[in-house]
Amino acid sequence: MPKKKPLILVTNDDGITAPGIRALIEVMKQLGDVVVVAPDSPQSGMGHAITISNTLFCDPVKVKENTKHKEYSCSGTPADCVKIATQEILHRKPDLCVSGINHGSNSSINVIYSGTMSAAVEAGVEGIPAIGFSLLDYSLTADFEPTKKFVKIITKNVLKHGLPKGVVLNVNLPKLKESEIKGIKVCRQATAHWEEEFDKRTNPQGRDYYWLSGKFVSEDEGEDSDEYALSQGYVSVVPVQFDLTAHHFMRDLNSWKFND
Image (cartoon, rainbow, N blue to C red; front, side, top):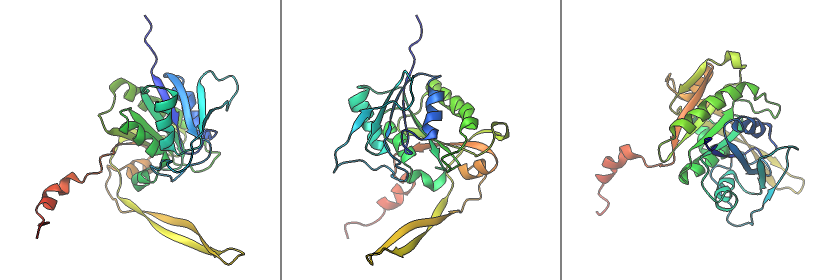
């Protein structure tokens, strides 16, 4: 009896027509039965936002002709896409959720702002093994062909081994030719931050408005971080957990006198 193919949910934060998700779909179709539920417009930087004060729409679409898998365009956030996919479209947990391939880095501190990774984390919350993929190229004309080999290798390993409860993978891929990528490294999240700046302007009606910009600053000199691996030409794989408890501080915090 032939082995049943895994059911793979594909989503992203750049929108259902983005080149990155198209590349991801191509790889996932080699590994299982694919259903796509993705935002109808770009949702970058949305983090783990969910829609609670507006109605949600989720409609079947045909982004490409002659596709056999089902695709749905959702008016909500990446996290919304995962929620509505499992509750209203699939009617069961998929065997895997993959998010991306994002146009731009989600390494280091970027993981907390990322809609791509928030979709993966939402899947993890719901007990679904999940991976977020990102390419270090912000261009809409980015070449995703070199990523496909590594996306497939990592995905096959997750399908084979599974992931611990509460853990998802944050995968970042360097902007290099396939032959230039040195391999895959398991890493920790680098310590870094953004030095934000606001470009203040005034509209014709005299009201001030702002554009957010900034500079990414890495404070990490370790050779086991995702930033270091990417700088050396490796694909970085960071296991991420959604339990934000600072367990190492629990003992000290319990020594405080809260009742005085």
